[in-house]
Length: 472
Image (cartoon, rainbow, N blue to C red; front, top):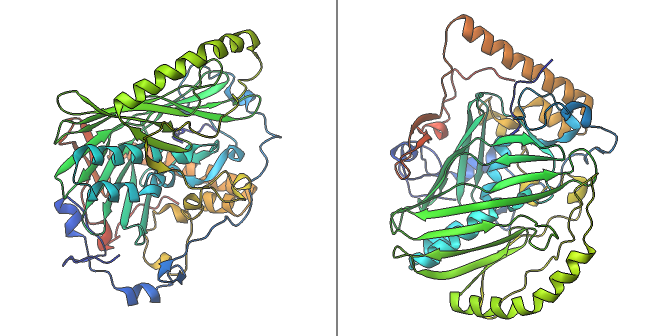
């Protein structure tokens, strides 16, 4: 049976009716003052020194993928988009793609830092660091997230980080995931829609970024937009799986005219540029104000353009001889794309300012899908949540829950059942000539780019979840 899914595969001072807020009228309409006593009574996460504690591991470790051959599945798909392909569940990770994109918010403090800056260039530095940090969790994450079902939703409320998030799978063909996050104090709104297009190239799978990401800093009346870099997973057939991200990311401040251009470098012939990111920030007169450099797997720095150029000139003198030796030693491997040896530290230019450093992963991360601490907690269903969440939330997906618990046979059966149920529902709508209606987002125009975008319509946090689709 063919699978027709795509692999994407705090307290506020508001006077409305739920616990958070945001920029649009729709966001403010469904905000409410947070009731701490009610939160304690509904079985929330245990607290320590007033800070909520979240789980730091999964219920069971991951299964080995070494005994599964993917070649029989993919050999007819070279150069094609990865749709209508049934993948063994062992290649998944126990998260929905809606949860995976929520990992953008792991380093929310960088947005808060941007909000606190008085200088627009410094704000752009913080936003650029956030844009890089938002894709950092993909490092070594070679598992495929589950394809969200049409109408599937996910919410995340993190009072300690000061935000709330809601996302919805708004389209199945093409697969589109829309999200909306807002600061609890009304300082920012972060929203967008993601629909990555994936292709198989024999040894690798490449994800082409689609969709616009928008960050609004309300205090400064600023809006920034950008798209993510390409992502490629190497050695799908043979060898050790490894990931690189590459391409140019342009972050535009639509209020000031400032722009940041980031070049996510491909590894290159000898791997010396693996994970590197280099770029610059220019003002509206196109004058370069600073250089940004680092690795998306480690850290990002900022330095004065003149200092950077001087350092690069002196560096090139020492590199020419070294490069000659590397050319003589290089060898090609036709069976697998060997992962280049990674130099784990960034060479810091004197006078640089640290913008962001990645958090260490837990010691047991390698046995749990290389999840970060943040990712470990995303599918956590604590007592009391069942009475609050809508029935469409990812946490209720039986296939993801079974995989998380190590029950791979049950997970595979549930995944097949859910996909068949989705196909049957689509055929029924076609017979009845019914169109699918999204619940929390609608197609509109992004006011900053002028392009079509999925816009949050509000109301989600009013907790009125009547007439939801039965998707699980």
